[in-house]
Amino acid sequence: MRALILSDIHGSADAARKALAHFERLHCDKIFILGDTLYHGPRNPLPAGHGPMGVVEALLPYKDKIVAVRGNCDADVDLMMLEFPIAEEYAVVEDTFETPEGESRTYRMFLSHGHIFMPECFPANALDQLEPAGEKGRTIDAYLYGHTHIFDVKKNFKGVQMFNPGSTSLPKGGNPPTFGLYESPVANEKGPKFSVLHLESGEELAYTTL
Image (cartoon, rainbow, N blue to C red; front, side, top):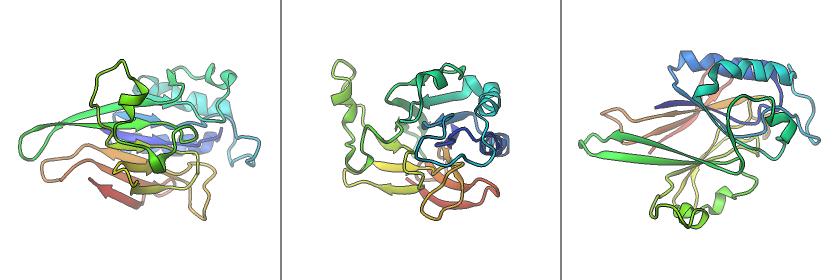
């Protein structure tokens, strides 16, 4: 699996198109959208290239490849415009691959915007609590979130890998606009890789190989 990771587009058609241009360049087969897709939000300025319908049109060709979650700025009327399912609070994506030792490994990612489930204290056994009637023991390896508009690649004190791709249109903390990339491991890698990439140039700004 190779997934483009987008968050906090906030209605910028220009940012959406620039990010999606990397889909083919990076040979992706999935897109993870971590919320705040169409509305710029009352506390934010209008992003450059603002045009929510342009975002809708840019995402439409990829609708069958998208896994999306709802952000705090995503209203019902916004979600009605998007032609792909959007999880209300979280989504779980599993990537199963063969390790260099020849063993099958399932890597489990928890996708949420970040305003409901706090990444800093998110536990690996969260699904046992969130889905008590579901299968037990589905350990969360990584939590993918947005909301802060600041990219981040680190493990929390619960041992869960946190990954925030930053914002494509309204970055904070002095950062440039960014997006993320998830890559399944190949034979000579220890594990999956998360990268933060510059929206304009595609330059890798931060990464972790697990």
